[in-house]
Length: 277
Image (tube, rainbow, N blue to C red; front, top):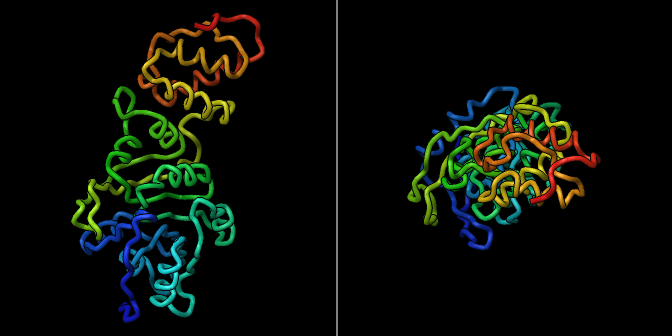
């Protein structure tokens, strides 16, 4: 497919735009996605269409989303006749469940993610995990390492836990700054998140689990006894006598963190327990 109407767009720093220019990287990403005929693809931030032109195909269901009206216009010029659904919107405000319901299938997300909103986009995808099959996204390498980190690794933290709770994560390959215009000052990585049908271990109270993880990793230099003491005080209950509270949060696997959350949930409202440190 050729694109005679493909215009050039001046990247805007305010939007964190670094447009992918390397066709070899484009082909590697397409190969990694392994598109199937029944797939519903959603591309975040198509830019000048480096990925879009290979994602699009006759009969394929592809939606592209961008907040930049210049990009939206470029996409409509490249794909006239509605063969690609172009949405001018902030991805963070898009109802992913609605996209999945309208297509009758869980969506597959792909995109070169603006560095300045990587974490909010990731959490938006994870919050809608039941509507998403997988996501193949390009982000800064340092964030990809945090997402894929294992317990005991200094990078293991909130992103690692929440990503691993909802998805299987894998860093596929790195991308040098020379693959973009303008060149970013950092190395990027292509990351895949394949959503689990069920969390690695279902928390009894998921909102409580999330709050506990945020609280304990927010004070990661403290032992669990100390960091959970603050959390228990915020939630208005006494910290129970649970073994292993001398460890630090980054030492616990997701399974152990869920078990800890469930134990705390079970003791809420009890007057017994360990006094706050």
